[in-house]
Image (spheres, rainbow, N blue to C red):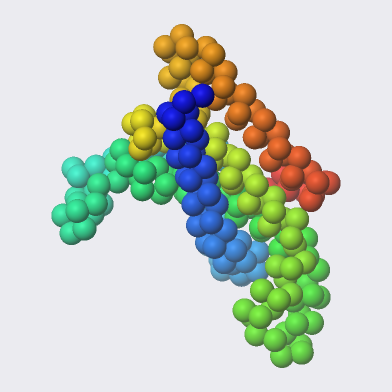
Length: 226
């Protein structure tokens, strides 16, 4: 194992960590809205959130790549006003990763909200607690397994991403080359020993993540039931 090996895994871990942090902060309010709101078009938002579960990663990556291109309005706007080019950059694959992993965080947290008794929230309101206090002091502490499941699933799925990252970021060593892409590269180059090092690490890491999920949530069907 050389410096390139550790650099590749550092990019993978950095991408997974930032994606998980962003989605944890954004996923709680989104999941809360989807669970408790009576908004008529809520089903449309639910479908959009869950879209990455059924949409091929290459399709999502393709449209994001077009959006990030200077030839289209978003990419042109970012490039012209902020001198920011998202295509083939770490920031670009981070945005793609956040969008692609959104349902893994939101659906897990939403499942936690749905399993809480409605009386818990009502009782908090009855004694004069605000919505924010009820959320952070009453609801979230009672759904820790769902929160841990969302964090672990998001982190592990980001580590294993391939299609979205390849489409948006290419495969630039030291910049957008992550471990899942490295396995493919090394197999293409017939470097099976190096490919095995990457693959074995990913295999063991995924297994450990699943152990954590099953240890905090012994009923996996609950968090799979989106």
